[in-house]
Length: 126
Image (cartoon, rainbow, N blue to C red; front, side, top):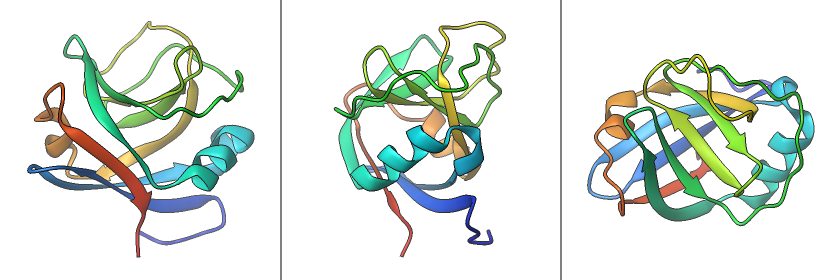
C-alpha cells in the first residue's frame, strides 16, 4: 500500500483476532475523514448489524457529507446518527445513508470473524 496525500493507511486491530489493514480515502468525504484522522486512535466494543456490517461507536460528531446508501463488501463508512465507523462484510444494496470513508485492503476475514463485544482499535500504521 502506497501512502499518498489522499489515501492514508490505517490498521484495524480486533483483540484476540488479529489486524486488518485499511485506508481512509480523503476525497470520498474530506471533512469526515479529517475529523476521524484527528481523533485517532479510536477504540470501542464491536456491534454487528445482522451479518451485513460490523461497527464501533466513536463519540465523534460529524454531519452528513456526500452520503450514499449502497456499499460493497470491504468498504468503510461513517454513520452520522450514532457516530459509528462501519465496515461492510457483505454487499448491501440499500441501507441507511452514510458517509463513505475508505476500505479494508487486507485481512477482511478478521473483521468477518469479529463478535459483538470484541474490542476494535483503529489507528495509524507506524
